[in-house]
Image 1 (spheres, rainbow, N blue to C red):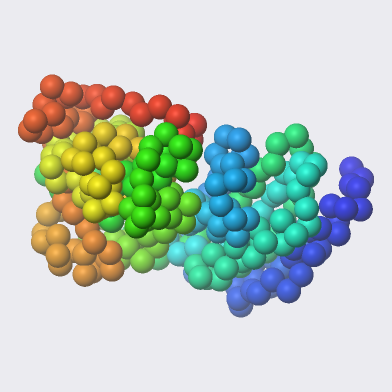
Image 2 (cartoon, helix red, strand yellow):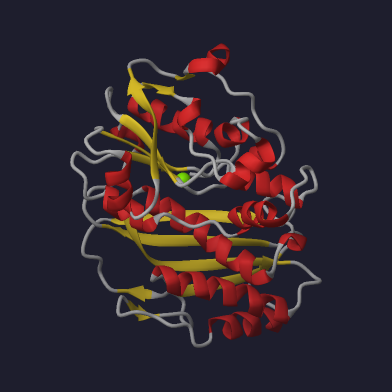
Length: 327
Ligand SMILES: [Mg+2]
């Protein structure tokens, strides 16, 4: 199919001078990229961000959008304990977006790729009614792979970082919630500039037996459900143990609804034998870790303590959180 020259020019411009590591034998410019053989099993994931569904341009700069579109994929590699390696990018472009916009989008994407050691080895541009960015990311497994099916009765359940910040940040930039000053800045930044927990994932992959893990893209309750389903187990979660940031508390108090149901945090949830203290585990993973519950026999999650009445179900949050369905 013949493409208008604008698309060829744009892809050539965006791919010009892309840095690449030794693993990339041939980068963009031919029909396919060529990669050197991997030392171990390979991981492959894909994710799309669609304008009007997953983002609005007014939320942030093109650089932020470019970086974020890679981070959501990096997070899936982190959740498997892998090392991200190379990606290909598809841009569906609509009228009204300038060349300068795409230059800036790629500046953010290239920055995130360089920081994570990822080669951008190819791209495609297509015209569409809706603007979207789709990235397929290849990774390498080093050590164990962190499968959702690895959870066992008696395992402790941990999460990295703090939860619910992104759900609040999204509501703030959408005008549904009011926040000011440092708390507002922190929460919006947590939503727009998430961090993929790659180092923590790599450290988890060195634990034997291999932990179960999932990245928190859809929210604690939903993503924990994936582990329970794949492992054939149940869970008890202590809502008082769920880590909340000072900014979260400033905006939402001790209401854990956003931490339980809100997505987009891109922290890791993992299940492993409770051999180490939270502090020791945090040092090993290079990020703050909190134990929030345990794996039990059964097939569903229950909340302990004051929210016992909510057993088995957490009131779903509406809006953004329902729009994504990520692996
Ligand atoms: Mg995932």
